[in-house]
Amino acid sequence: MAKIILDPGHVEGYNRGAVSGYYEGTAMYHYAYRLADKLRAAGLDVGITRTKITDNPSLTARGKQAKGADMFVSLHSNAASSASANGVTVFYSIKRNADKPHATKWCNELAGLINGGTRARGASTRKGSGNWDYYTVIQSAVAAGCPHVFLVEHGFHSNKAECAWLMQAGNLETMAALEARLICDILGIKSSDGAAQEPASMGQKMVNTPGDTLNVRDAANAKGAKLGELKDRSLVEVYGLAGNGWVLIQQGALRGWVNGKYLVEPEKTFAPYIVRVTADALNIRKGPGTNYDVAGCIRDKGSYTIVDEQDGWGRLKSGAGWISLAYTTKAGDAGTKPELTRILKLTSPNMRGEDVRWAQERLNELGYNCGTPDGIFGPNTDKAVKAFQRANGLSQDGDIGPKTWAKL
Image (cartoon, rainbow, N blue to C red; front, side, top):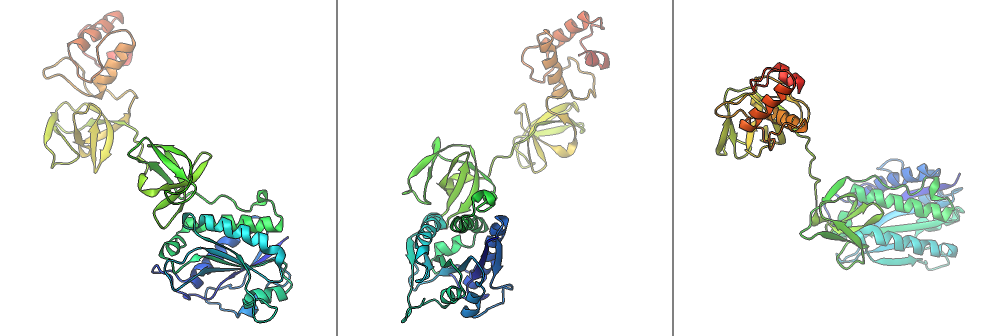
C-alpha cells in the first residue's frame, strides 16, 4: 500500500487572510483531513503531520515524518504585500528533478480550478546558499529518503477573491478530488481505485436568463472559451463557486462555468389536490390574504382543486382566486374521484365545485355531452345527467345523488 504524508502548514490561527475568518494554518489543517479522506478512499495509507489543530511541530520534524513514505506534500496558501497577487505555485526538490513534470501538471490543473482560473506560476525549486533546498520542510523530507516531495501554494490568501474561494466547502471538496487524482497519477494508482471521486453536488439550480440560453465557459469569466449552452428554465448541478460570482455547474456531459446571477432556486413542483369547504360562506380573494379584495364567495360547501399554496391560502384551479385553507379539509389528490358530500343538481345560483367538474368529465367520457367541464352545474350538465340516468335505468330527475354518483 502506497503511503503519503500530508503536512498542513503552520499552526492554528496563523497567517490571516484578506477575508475575515480565514487563517492559513487553520484552513490547511482542515483541508488536509478532507484530502486525506479522498486518498484513503483510493486505498492509500495517509499520515498527517499535525494530529491536532494546535500542533506546531518544527519544519525538520515535519519532514522527518516522510521516512518510509512514497510522497510528502506540504499544504499552504500564499501571501504577498500586493492584494492583486494571485496564482498557484508547486515547489519540488532540487534533488528530485524527475518531479518537475508532475509539479508542472499539478500547478496547471490546480490553477485552472481555483477561483475559476487563476495564474499558473509554475513548477519551481528554491535553492539555499549551498546545494540544499531553501525550504527546510522539503530538505528534511528528502533527507528522510522520500522519493516525491512537494510544497503546494493553493492561491493567495492575501487576494480577497482567492481567499473567499478557499473558504467555500464545495470548492474545497472539488479541489481535494482534483489533488487526490493528481497524487494517485504520480504514484501510478488508477482513478478506478477510488481516487478523485467526483465531489458531491452542492445542490441544484435553475437557469433563469433573459435570453433562451446561457453560455457555459471553461473559466469563471466572460472571456473563457464557450463550451456549450444551457436552455432557460433547465436544471443544473452545482459543484463550485468562484469569488466573482461565477458557478461551476454540470448538466449531463456538459461541465463548466456560468455567471451565477442567471441561476435561481428551482421552482417547486406542486401536486394539485382537492379540498372540501367547511364554512357556510367562504370568501374568494384576489390574492393569498385578507388584505386582497374579495373576488367572490363559496356558499355550497363544495369540493375544489387547489393548484398552489401560500401562507395558508390555496389558489383555485378555476382561476377565480384564493381561499383560506383554514376553512377546508383535504378530500384527495386532484384527478381522483372526490367524495360526494351533497346532492348535485341544477340550482340558482348554479352549484360549483370539483365534484361537479369530476361528474362533467366523467359524463363527457361516457358520451353524454356536458360541454366544457368547468365545475359549474348548468343546463347542459342537467341534460347530460338525465340522459345518463335514462340509459342506466335510474330516476331521471337530473340530480346526482349516491346512486347516480356510484353508477358514474
